[in-house]
Image (cartoon, rainbow, N blue to C red; front, side, top):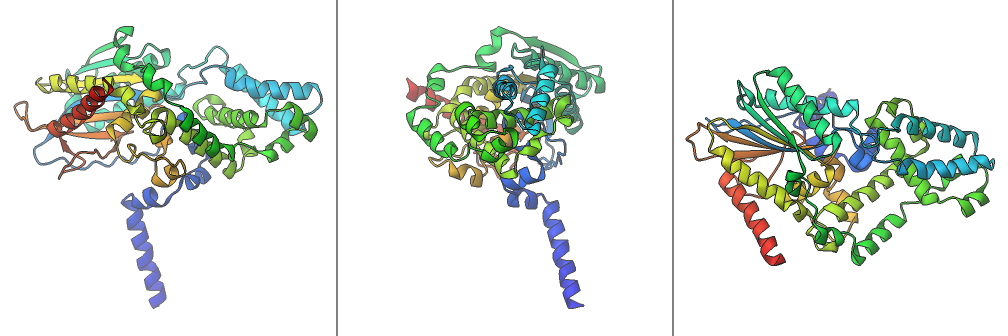
Length: 439
């Protein structure tokens, strides 16, 4: 009897622990996530999470949301160009013409043909799923922060000049207007704003993969590239594979091709992802995660400065927030762009643990620096501002990363709420220090 009672108590404790959200967040490794859902390994091709549990910490007494500033990535899309499909397809096509494919290899080749046919003329286009994602995010904004979007609230939306971003903006606005037709909406997509909406810093870009970073990445990825089992499943001649097939690229692009299909209607029609073990998929995830850390994260191996590519965007967002705070009812400012913006911006903001710097790539996974949690399709950062009334100068802000409350590198006794004066000063000081040192 005592044993049963003890078991019951422990079970209740585990349930309560998990309900608080800590069980899932603290105990699951990247491999655990992949074992549960292989799509998690897709890196920047991950779809937006559809099982969000949107907890909200109540704001301090009297404070109400009055303004929202947002930057979001476009929604789910097709592959940007056919190169990623052509590389594996040409290898398989040549092998098939010489009778070197197994029946399974011929099946994979046929599935690639179906994928290419479905994607033709839609390279980089927003998919239907991408439109749904942005409508849903926009509607949830309005549900969570109704004070911002009530009545004739003003919505100022901007997009980069890329079609999938423009359509993402349109889908979000469509979702909002369907809930409140009185909204006063302004939309724009112009090269005029690209200097901060999609800033390109040549100096930082050229240092992304310097010699030290390149060497470290090659050493890290080198033992995670080969998949001899896959070759034996696809080809009937090991000598041919050794002499004619680029095993590394075939393995990489076949897996990448399979994973991106979750963003299109082909996701339910393609089955060759089953050729890869969880270990294969996990290794792919590790390589991709390390690559993004070098290219857009705060890696010390290339100077740790890549997030500063988004200093113009952050400064612009701060300046616009300062202006909007002066208004009686500022509404919301929405911006739509790319993962190559939202990942370094997250690192520049040091949201959660994403300002983490290390020389050892092996530490990224154990420390929770997982790029896929930052930039799934339709990923977004929302600054939500609070005050008691238009005359209240004690403005607070909280930041949401993919609609979940995030921590900032600023002291606060009321986190996830922070004094806007502290937040703006911290980031302006950080940007100024970089720019002054650069000069």
